[in-house]
Length: 411
Image (tube, rainbow, N blue to C red):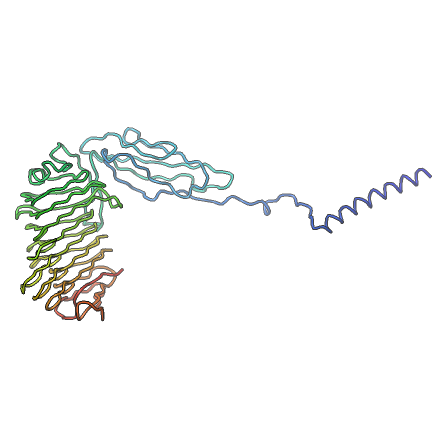
């Protein structure tokens, strides 16, 4: 009899276990499956990289950090192939240039390495860029072979190579020295004459303002460049009651924010006058604005150059505005033959007068891959049409009365 009761007890326990299991299902609780490769979330795969594969830097340009992307929450460490040329903070990636010989540009490789984390794996665990360190300050220059802006480096030899205070700044600009560096904010009251070839380098955050005419003599080619293309690129401003900038041997602009403006005058003047010589705009943000004239004489031009050639190329941005005339023909935005190529953009705006000025007057050659579109105005105020110059073609612009006001190269 005792055996029977034992058997009954075992059966009751088994029934109770089955009942509990049924209740789990009844109330919606499910048994948790054993983790498998299909049910366990796998960390995402990420590949780290630098935004640049090559960077030029001068020993006097200070420290910088080139950010590595796609790091997730992985721990990144940095290293330099030659810390004597450029050292790098192993945690932050901040680079400090070392010292190199004056005539050398020395390459060094900066490497970032990331470790896998709980939330990410990295098939590509390292990224590198080549840093080319030279002695001095870097600046933009045009590579005509590859049709792009590149960097060069120059080391100033003396205090005379710096335009860094208002005291003596005009004399320094007019003195010897093929390269001058603008540092800080400098204002010059009165005109400046440049007697020989000059490359003016605008360091980051620098601003040079000349309140008067800037004239480069027939023996002097004027070139202007900047330390970088960033938002803090240097500025060069010339404001005058007559023509702002006159270059009698040609002018090159590689970078920076350049303004040539005629202000407060009633006798007009060109923004930039290059006579019969070329104006090459390879980069930077350039504004040329003519002054108004209160007479029946013809107006002045934003950019003027009888028989001159204007090249707008690379990633340059140009805005040229002609002056108004009270009772004569207004000025043109650009009065010269123009070639546009690369990704360059320009806006040419004619002044108002009798008749109104053209956006440009001259032969326009479009060597870019996109059309140049002129928005046209028959009355100088209302945009009522357009004229398009297709890629790879050229045409005489300004001979049609409707082509007034502005021409915009649209990408």
